Image 1 (tube, rainbow, N blue to C red):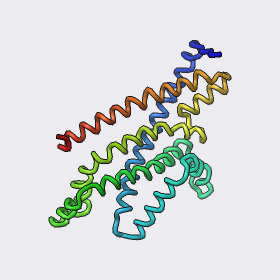
Image 2 (cartoon, helix red, strand yellow):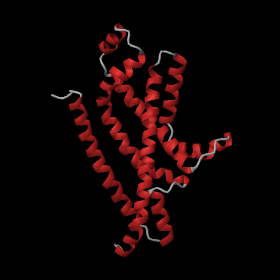
Image 3 (tube, helix red, strand yellow):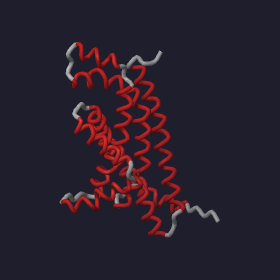
Image 4 (cartoon, rainbow, N blue to C red):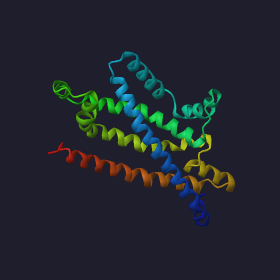
Length: 223
């Protein structure tokens, strides 16, 4: 029988709101790491230096082919055996950042390869350095192409933050589990967590579509 308790709902809401801030922080920091490292991975796969190219490509494939939860466990529980001891928060941010960096690197790579070859040849003809070519000419044109995939993974990284609960990071799912264990009531905590995820994910996705359209207009890529 459906037995929703509103008094209990208002009692647990402050803890869930605090956990929401932790979840947003985890998603934001993890995504920031993924954006930067993903670009490094993408450029590493395009370098003419074969040892670097192959090493980065294999690393990306390894990360993409293993579960995120396994990577979280590895960073938190296995890394200390090699003298690397990190807090649950730091371990979670590194694991989730590297995991999504491997996916974003493919988004970046696809966007870079979509740039017409003539752009690269023109830059080479006027003796622009590789750095100027990438950051001054190519990446600004590739950004609008990459934006849909980047936005998709932003929402994805937010929805994957509950996996950090396995190492004790106090995000939404960890807090909901704790509340359920303390009170033996799981209906309200889990329902509220689902509502909170929807309330953040749906507007974020809509906002990303608006930002994508605005970026294309600013760069003159729409008629």
